[in-house]
Image (cartoon, rainbow, N blue to C red; front, top):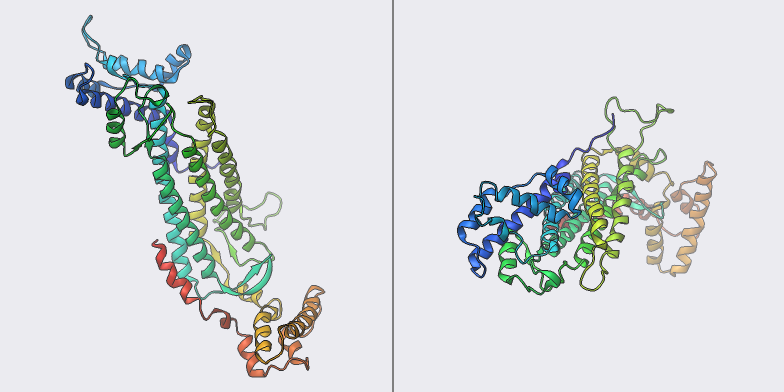
Length: 447
């Protein structure tokens, strides 16, 4: 069965029903603001009538747009049909006050920012759930030994809890970025053509924005500046990149040669049509694939910043694609990441085996420092450490039996370290005497 999108709350934000509902609220609020301001002829009773009778139908708007070729005018026409229904022939129509002094961008841009705020709130909740999972699992695995890798090569001992802790901090930074970009996009403008308030008082803008939880744009030129939208898409791309980084590590840990961790594999699940033994990291791979889409969409946001003079609509068509696609894709992949990390299967015995796979080479840094402490130069110590390490390395690569790194050092007359010193050096926990500070800091994440 083809998997269905199971997080519809994000998708609903970008449906026409929600967009037009926001448009309706903006138009009604503007009428109420005009009535309170008292500069034009709209009365409080007319504003109340508009509030009570305002409505729309998506199908009717679509029908009107076929002829009008203008979505805002189609919407306003449909809304007027409801507002004026039942008004006596020849009597003043209350709908005449709707959209008074406004331009299409006042409506569309303010509503779009409101939708972006709605989407951001969902994404903030997503990263907080993932951060909470990572914090919990970091504390659970703070003493689960594994080997650290740099350049893909075994480096020094660490713990699995450090990996989960690093991911928790990544989600904390994601949360902070989303909170900042929420503030950046929580903006509106009801300023008329070219943004000069030529036919509308700034009070209307303040009134509408305050009730929507938005801040008036200090100086719009009919459209809101698109650097705000570019920042929004850039932050989504950064959050997606963090999710991709985590998923890539899961994929790497699940390789048959490593197999220290494995994403959940449900009962009855099949891994390969040709090779029944396979348990592939398909969800982590999906996260990585969708992250590429979100990252690519950020470029559209940057391209949309430069418009002709005070405005054009070259940004509009592209935004209708990338804003919905990026938020839906990011929400989806974060949901999948949450599932992977919450159920990530760990294999500590395999971690320990991998830790010891290089026959003690991972302790070379401590050998180097211990030799320097005996009084010889760093260059002399490095030569002793590397000479013996390369011998063991070659044996490993050729699958030959041979001495462990400690045994090689003990057989080297140039190595003056005692058995007691070597015992202390070849203890993985000797590298980890100070990691408590990492887990104390983790409390600051606040997840």
